[in-house]
Length: 154
Image 1 (tube, rainbow, N blue to C red):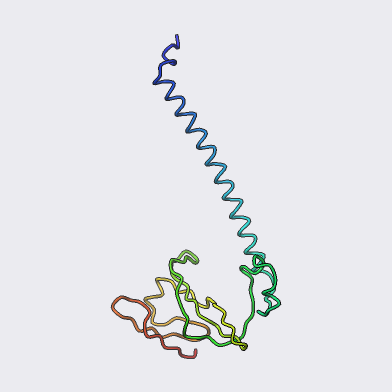
Image 2: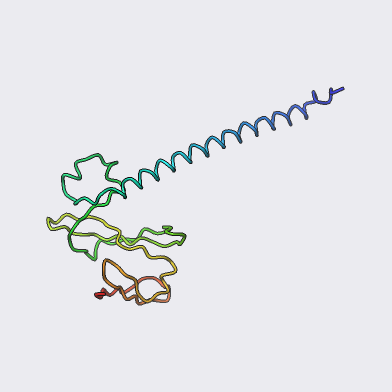
């Protein structure tokens, strides 16, 4: 009565269905593992950013490097114009933009790279942005990129 199920076409179809089921189950477990990784990462970032601000000194840097990631520190120094670079394709609060990273020179001459400014692509249409407690007046060229920055006190 069900002899048609023994034909090669039907056997292949059932094997294909079983393979698809196994693949989908593995993908479901993969998504659960990714969720666990994301939750662990988010908990780590939250615990490090909620910790007390500590001064940036040599004693802090002697600890485990994993304990320093996303840790808030306090440093006093002067911002240098160079080196400066941008980290592009950054998303923050649903908008795309870039982080401007500058060097902060401490009193002992040590350079620390800090990210004091996030500017969104929508902010490119503004005439100025706030940067390190100063207002930057932007002059745009035809490509609408940041050029000829002038630092003015707020």
